[in-house]
Image (cartoon, rainbow, N blue to C red; front, top):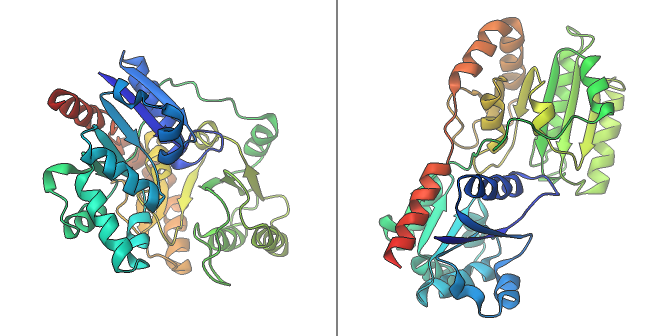
Length: 341
């Protein structure tokens, strides 16, 4: 069985790119014949492959472009074994803003993709409304653990910050993405407000927010200024372009107050490392995470105080969560497609 995986690949370190990296490493580690095509769209891969599409039993795409998804559907119609993973709300947003023609084209393509993996049940339900056969859809959480326990080392500057702060809060996101004047996709404003409240009780508190890239520069600058105005000169930092995993292992708490989310792989990663995780209720979360109401600063603060007030219990609960890897489910999908072909 020969597998091609086409999609984002670190750097930058985002949830999807790390998923692709780890999936390739797991397949390779267990002896599968796998080839990664990093940071390629489906359209670019089709052009560059130049007829080598026939060399693979399974073509697994991680593409968010609606036009590329139409192309993936056409490949399925031609008889190729194509898999598409939909990680977040991209299909939902595409259909919401689509006219009749675009919606029909997307529906047609989805119905002809060999197999679609959705990271949450909402994606499956949406696909069924488009007429996709239930047997062509699987709900599989996107979490894959590190192949090897040793992660990239913590940079010295981060290690010094971790050593000099407690409690140590970690958060992450792909970039600064404003939703309105008051909110951003990853709830970064809420994290700053939370830290400003907690530092009165925990003077040595520290918080690092990992971003793959800056994104909206103006809003990023506003957030940095807000942290300083909140008295967090020494307690709060953004970390751009670094891998989260090694630092996350050393966190006291991981927080994810997102306003939109597909699944929140980093929430599951936190629990995998035995670190208590706080997450908004905007989507289905890994069992074991403490859930608060999306956009509710008071509920967010209450959850944080609950964890810090009885940290030994919170830590024990996180260790007992034991998240499951998606690997076996994905491998079963590959084998099913390869066997039929």
